[in-house]
Amino acid sequence: MPSTGLHLGLSTLFIRKGLLSEERLSEAVALSRKNKQPLVSTLIATKVLSAREVAELCYEEYGTPLLDLNEFDITSIPEAFLNKKLIEKHKCLPLFKRGNRLYIGTSDPTNIAALEDFQFSAGLHAEAILVEDDKLSQALEKVLEEDISALDLDGIDEDSLSGIEITDTDKRQEDQASDASDDAPIVIYINKILTDAIRKGASDLHFEPYEKRYRIRFRIDGILHEVSEPPVNLSGRISARLKVMSKLDIAERRVPQDGRIKMKLSRSKSIDFRVSTLPTIWGEKIVMRILDSSSAQLGIEKLGYEEDQRALYEEMLAKPQGMILVTGPTGSGKTVSLYTGLNILNTQERNISTAEDPVEINLEGINQVHINLKAGLTFASALRSFLRQDPDVVMVGEIRDLETAEIAIKAAQTGHLVLSTLHTNSAAETLTRLINMGVPGYNIASSVNLIIAQRLARRLCTECRQPEDIPEHELFNLGFSQAQIDQGFTVYKPVGCDLCSGGYKGRVGIYEVMKMSDEIARTIMEGGNSLQIANQAKEQGMRDLRQSGLRKVIAGVTSIAEINRVTSF
Image (tube, rainbow, N blue to C red; front, side, top):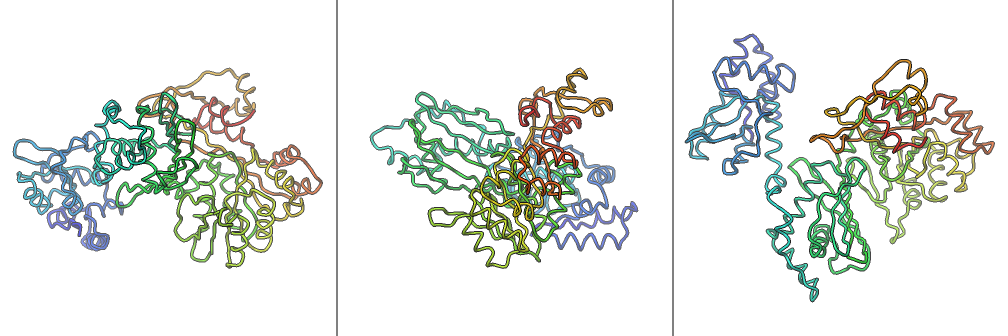
């Protein structure tokens, strides 16, 4: 059981300094015992004291040296002193050795038991060094990420792999042999690639064999970057290792295969990879999609919706029936928008079912169905089954055909809230796509509540972005209104630094949110085209993707070049 840090000296100090009453201290002690965390952490978490206040108070009272952990390289800690059982038990971190002394980072210098345990374990005299509790927690989290920190990821260079040969006589036997040892260089190399991709925030990894070269690329913020070029003769070994990890048939190289890898980063966090293989003339191309469940837990306020757009989405999510459609090309963030909506709806009172192809992220409390076309489990058949299972909310991964569209619309008209996606370029085009599928206009007008078209634009790095001087007439030609220009704003451009990728870091959503109104319904019933529908929506105050993107430029979030890339004008 972790130490709760209930040390008399620190408790007495807080009372003596008038920072805590005995009653408040008793409450904090009880809470720290319940949560099995140090008293200092409890006081800071409940905002009774700040981490800096506690550290400075202890420094003044006990004279213990104070260290800023942000300025300390935790990778320099000798592996021999990283006793993880003691680290977890006492919430302390061995930092460095000087002579026969081991210095222990702690937010509670009165924790004598911790010093004694580390002293006995290391065979050295242990001394405390004061660190701020919040910074200590971050450092402990990094140290305890076992699967990453246990690998010497920076000690691998591609030249060291060139000595591995692969013959044509028995590739299968050679591939299987290469995976027999966990110490094989190819295993360590693949681990390095996967963990590098996670650290860099990649969404996809591409392993691509060619006649005279083999390249590995990461998709970061929507753009592919080449990150490694291992020897081409390792093509078979790399694909075999990835297929073994994905539980695929390594002997089958003639047809595509799909699998998954689950990578545990720490006790509380894991990452899934969706793996797809494709036979090419020079070997198997493998693409891996990183599925981070934390992206599905994002609050709607972090997605990039403007206040009025967000309010409209939340208003429609609160309705008991109808259809919400999210549209855009592949990789535009539709899944995250849908999952965010599902998380808002996911309460004990609702029965929620989803049909997905494939199920990318597992959501606790939601019944998720993986579409299996070979077995006859289609979106339409899954949707029919949902309607016999007393649903409140139904999510269909994609409306691809008339049958699925008709069942989804029927569900929306009979007391169910339906969420789904289509691959269209704008909100207005979504309505005409349904009409072209064969859905009657009156059914569309009576069932669709909201359509969201979206794109993802790269965020400017706030550390290196620089103002860009653009004449007013050019701003007007780019789509800014005269009122926006008259108010004045700063346009920034990307530069690039060590903290970002080409001047950008992360992505933000750009949205076109169209509510079904009586006027738009009338336009649909009269056979209006997408241009007429869009004009009607704009008269009612809808901003198209371009206008939403330019607002992000005004806010300094992204650049004009990026908005030009992701929106048409």
